[in-house]
Amino acid sequence: MAAGLPKSSDVRGVIAPHAGYSYSGRAAAYAFGNIDPTNFSRVFLLGPSHHYYTPKCALSTATVYKTPIGDLRIDLEVIEELKATGKFELMNLRVDEAEHSMEMHLPYLVKVFEGHPVKVVPILVGALGAENEAMYGKLLAKYIDDPQNFFSVSSDFCHWGSRFNYIHYDKKYGAIHKSIEALDKMGMDIIETGDADAFKEYLSEYDNTICGRHPISVFL
Image 1 (cartoon, one colour):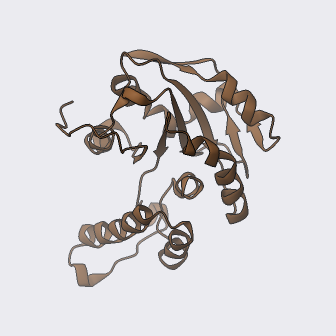
Image 2: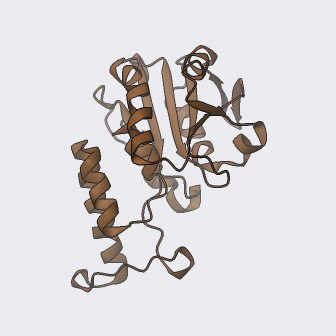
């Protein structure tokens, strides 16, 4: 609400950060600020895996996600549909609770969809190869086609510095933070075109440390 953005029925998905509320909370608020909750009954929540290695996607085994400002029920029917494809792993509760990428979106979703009985479908996206990204994208396509479904994709962008093994610096932009901003903006512009192959080419060329590259690619 504080973002003051107009609600738009055209917004069917967001890519929002998970760095921590003191770091990226305001940016996330602007991402979620456009959402008109009226026509949605389900939210697919896609987040990268930080602690648990899997070359697949994994589904939650929880029945409800609780937050200090309200709870979100898991859509067990859709979870069963996805399980039936045989393509998904299951997260145990320890893995589920340890992963912050989806957790950081939950209070925003509770707030945005307050008074609207939405259910969530949490999907932990592992270290997918290009073929698997496309395969999961095809599996989720029918849900994207349904206008009652919303997609919340969790990703921070450039992680810069020696601790991340990434110090790309294009001096033509001036200060280092301006170079990082230009690099991220380039990636965001490509994402907005919806071209998954162009996004792969961008990652291949710049190797930008976008932690949600796999969830974003699945969505694209």
